[in-house]
Image (cartoon, rainbow, N blue to C red; front, side, top):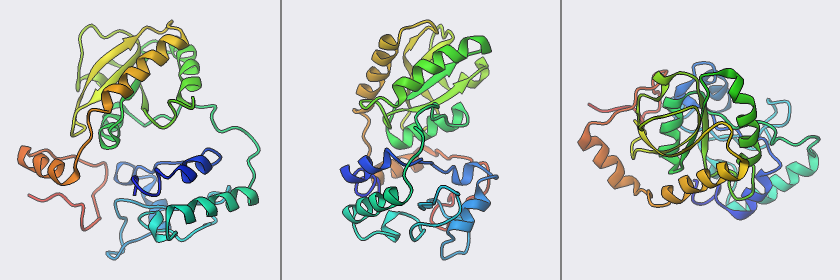
Length: 248
């Protein structure tokens, strides 16, 4: 899906004018009922992936919902054309790039970053007073044309949230993390203090992107190796996708 529809140049260009949301699926008990209302698979339960395009009211479906864009569109070109038509019907009224696209917590953020083969940027702010200025700088960078969509972001406020990271002398500020292959931990590859300039922060983020380019995975061997190592992920709610349940 990501290598065809979601990586297509026309789809990417059109998506800039959409509010793109990545559902948590089995990581959010609050989201699950809504996702189930959009699509249920053959088992009549929530499946691992759900795709939908909704009107600004958050309810009206603008395409056929399913597990992937392929349920609604015959090709990436078809999807790009449909998105442009939707934009003409629902023109934007305000920029959507005024907030940092945060994942809920460090644990999930590391896992998402590993799945997407992207670095993770952690805004580590034990003192709430240091957070706003640094977050404002990161907002400007997160939506920069050379960085948008290439990193994951989250906030940490307590040292215990960083226990799965390999790091020495961690101080508050920006932590750029290279996730482990299976998303159960990661390594801090560089960091910046809260008062760092936007240019210095951008340099740190770009270093993370450069390193992540060397961590491409082949699904079949990746999954097989994970099973050999006995690596499992415990979800917030039970997995109801028949093809995604953990095997003993």
